[in-house]
View 1 (tube, one colour):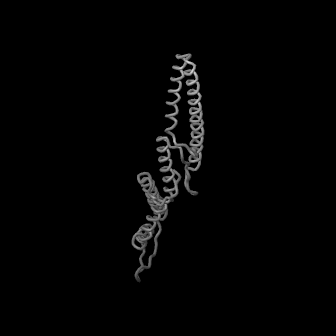
View 2 (cartoon, rainbow, N blue to C red):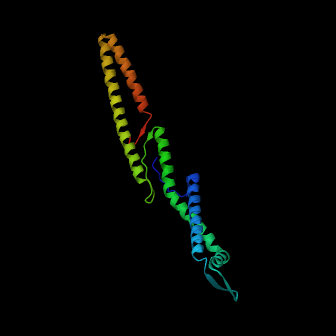
View 3 (cartoon, one colour):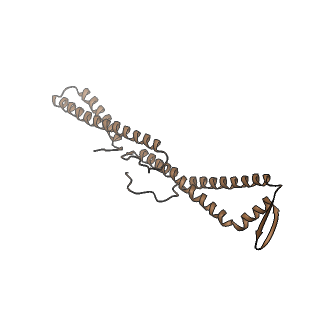
Length: 201
């Protein structure tokens, strides 16, 4: 499960990323509204002179500024909103991508595949968790590989003893016990065979 491709899709977990992008957008809009309200309250008793289309206009500062921002600078408001959306998309991608990768890795582990390690990009979040999952994969692979080896070796030894006892025609009850032990060992080995291990040979 080694990954040879690079992530190009920035909307990996659409629902999660959409929620955060919307939250960032609302946060910026709310901050702008609060700033405007505070500025309006502080400048409520002041007048502003505006020279527009050869006309000289005098008005209360909050109203004049609001009218100028909405009429002349609406393109900056739209551009600012789009900038917030784009930046938040890139920011959410840094943790949505690793989260998606962790989910897929756990799915693989649930299916018994331990033949992979998680590799994240340089700027991705969650490197500590990825390292811990990799350590878990390596530890499980090592233990299951050793159990497979022990099970295989034990099965061989049990078969040797069983054949020896049958040749001497002694200890039929002992042979039966050996058969049961061999069956149990084969069941253990069958369970262990379901796992695909990292660096398995």
